[in-house]
Image (cartoon, rainbow, N blue to C red; front, side, top):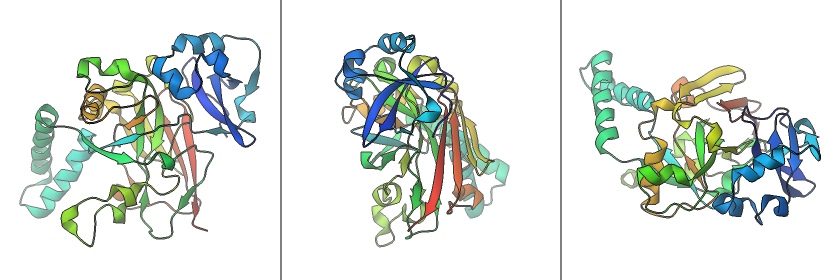
Length: 318
């Protein structure tokens, strides 16, 4: 349950209404149910495809129909048909990972290894391409759903990320055109089972993102969908706390490939559809770094500037 809204003047959210889920506009610590007629579209994705945030601004200015946020149960604010995830996209995080490997396997000092890794990353940013893989929309849930930790592993990890929500369909768009296809942003915690990332039966196959990232509830999302105009996505503070202890603390200004590059790159292969999620990568400070993974009873609190706060409670497998 969320008691306060994002810092933005207004946003959209979805909340539970009995067995159904309703769409609402959020302003401050209040939420107001929005009908299809008021939205001017039959559903959220149709609105994101063609709607105007001015419609939502007008609804946020209405005097009637409001309910305290504390009185409703929010769920995931989006219904994506596709989820694209970005790997190795925070410069400092990747430098530290590469440098650690170089220090372990060469005669370089830590300082030399970091300098070498920094040169590699700068070359990749200038001449390389983003690394994408695909998640299952079925794993997208709100923070109203506890994160059940599957019993088949003891190394489930967190990865807090800024997520782009696509507006108009984007297909083979340029970097200059890319931001015209962004409806807004939300928070996603991209949960990963570390010992399933690489295949053990045939290492040549490489990574197994299906097994390591797509268990039920492994993409806690929301609680709000905030219009792009209210988010400085190029320099947004990303903070994840585990039981009150800061673990990830960074800014999106450290992205190797910025959001226009990600949208343009992903759209070259397949159309990005209205309502789709494009995750931008996770900064340093995962459980793998701390050698501390998720346990029954843990509480993860994720905050990204102007997007509100997501609270995910972990439970052991039943």
